Length: 217
Image 1 (cartoon, rainbow, N blue to C red):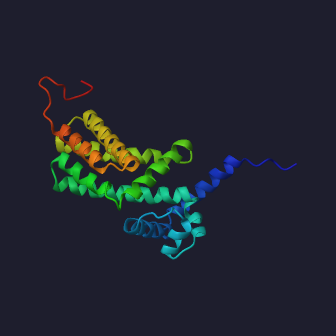
Image 2 (cartoon, rainbow, N blue to C red):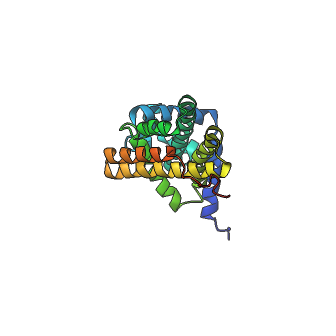
Image 3 (cartoon, rainbow, N blue to C red):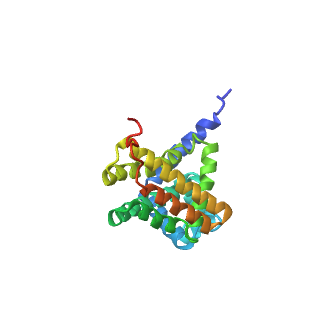
């Protein structure tokens, strides 16, 4: 009697193969093309067929390289997210006021042409939380990439201790994403923008006399 196949092991093997193919030159070219298309035209209906047609390939080839539709869109988001990290770093270098830099970043993320990308981020968030093992790399990167970069910036630019810089980074990422979720849900651009500016002013507010600068002190 032949041994029974393990479905979970089979899925893991396919995912591993797809991860390897996703690092190929052909896959990177497709991914760059997808990112440019999404930033210019939006994400549409999340159809692999439509994005594949725009890229001059087939949806089967996208699945071959990336494993599934979810993993393809995850890869697109990761590419966009890291490009945004680079853009945010450039902004920080030219805009030394962290509050002002935050407001400029909010204006970009909350723009009408960018909100579909934010909505896609939250959609993949939901799927990743339900299937942590499959999307663990996404869950690690979607928070860690931003908090890590901001922690380093706050430590060097503001002279904060590493522990306080990490707390501030985490609060900023959580606040901005929470307000973006609010905006996607309610459509209240005026209210969410006012809340973001209020938070930015709080960041620049002087500390109360006697307040500890190191949360672990």
